[in-house]
Every structure is written in C-alpha cells, then in structure tokens.
Amino acid sequence: YVVRPLPTRHSVMHVLLDAYREWGGTDKPNIAILDWREVPTRSEFELFMQYFESQGLTCKIVDPREVTYENGRLMHNDFHINVIYKRVLITELIERTGLNSPVVQAVRDHAVCMVNPFQCKLLYKKASLAVLSDESNADMFDEEELSIIKNHIPWTRVVEERHTTYGDLPVDLIPFMHKYREQLVLKPNDDYGGRGIVLGWQTNTSGWEKAVQEALASDSPYIVQERVGIPEEPYPSLVDGRLQIYERMLDTAPFIFYGDYVDGCLTRLSTDPLLNVSAGGGSTVPTFVVEKR
Image 1 (cartoon, rainbow, N blue to C red):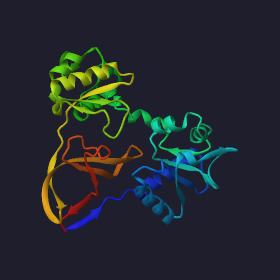
Image 2: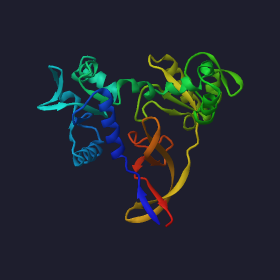
Image 3: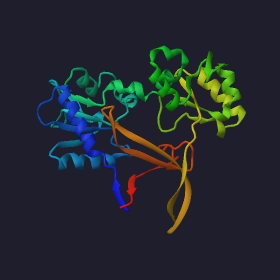
Image 4: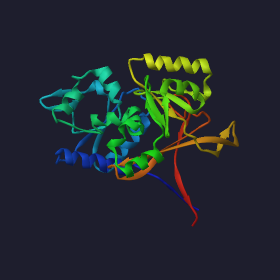
C-alpha cells in the first residue's frame, strides 16, 4: 500500500501571502500567529512557525495582550507585525481586550493584514445555518442553491415563539421541539467547545423542557437543529499496552481555501456524540490516504 498524509501548512502559508498581497503588501511580511499564550494548541502554532521559517519567512507566536500600536505600526517588542494569522477567537479578543485594543485599532487603520478578517465571525455563528435553512429566506436563493441547502444543511431554526415548517409540514416551533426531543439538538448561537449544547436524545423530558425555556429566556440566541447521524467505524487503540479495536464516531472537517478547494482536514474520533475535543468528548487524529500500489 501507498500511505500519504494530507499536509496543509503549505496551503495556509500561500493563503496568508496571497491575502497580504491583496491587502496591498509588497515586502516579505513578518507573520504573527495570534492567540493567548495559555491555549492548548500552542504546539500546533510552533509547527506552523517552524514551517514558515523554513520557507524564509519571519514568524512569532504572539499573545494579543503583549502587542502595542504606535505610529501606525503593530509591534510585539521590536517585532513589526505585517500579517496576523488569527487563531484567537474574535469574541474572546473583544471581551478581553476591548474594541480599542491595539489589534483592533491596527486592523481598523489598515496597518496590518489579518487573516481571516473580522467578517468571518458571521459564519462562526450557528444561526448562519438557520439563515440558509429557514423557509422564510427561500426567496434569497435560486433553485440550485435551494437544492444544495436541502441536501446538505440540517434543518435549523432560531429558538423563538413562532410558526415555521418542517419539511412540507407547518409546525408551531416550541411545541414541536417538546414533542420531538429525541430528534433535536439545542445549541447556543455563539459559543464553542461544546458549551451549552443539549442533545435531546441524551436528555429526559423535564431536562429538555427546562433547556428550551432557558434558551427562550436567554439574552443570547439559541438554535435548534435536526439530529444528524454520525458514522461509526472500528479503530485500533492501545490500552494498557494491548491493542484493542473499538467502535468510534467519526467527524471529518475539510479545510477549504479561497472558497474553492479542499486541502487536508481535521479528523476527530469519539465515543461521545458531542464529538468535541475541548469538552473532553473526542480526540484529534492524523489523517492518511491509503491506496493499493
């Protein structure tokens, strides 16, 4: 067999450089991988930094709290930052450093190129799927787009007192949620790490009804989404020095570049349908393509 990995660092580098040129940069940029120093993904940042440096670029891992913005230059000590490879979550960046932080000011003044930009926050919100799925927005899309949405986007609605549709059937949303708990999942619109997610099929009736009422009363929106089956496959695991084969739920998230092509993916395995690494519900694993010679 031929076994090959799915590397992505080269594509990330080219996207950063292309974005920098589109932004107006001409010289070789200094790249800052931006996130809090205490995040558990730092080892990944170090691998990116090593690769960028091997390609002749200058790169540092930088905490947003340790930068300054003076005379139109975003600085980390004496390091002038031209490109931000933004790994910090936008919500956390604003909550912790404010709207007038050095990073926000530099981006606002077009003094630094940030990839991805603040606009990407819209797609991070789970209600973006409700925009696509909700029948009240159908006139925003053509027939081909509606077909794609129907085939690939799970039924999703913002949680509120309203009438809507499920398939071709009219439904009263909140009573519908109560009745079909085992086919639904409740999620906060703007959170991560599995926080606030309630899986209806793992919750009793009273717990589900309480979660629905809390979602209705919350100052921040929640979405309700149709359950999507997760594939399971047997995977080898080394347990106490012995090789064991266990069924694992599989989630593969492709990396999309320029909105046009896929290069590599994030793969998670879990025994828990939440399938979230931050919440302790899974683990990330390398992905290889295996083909016969």
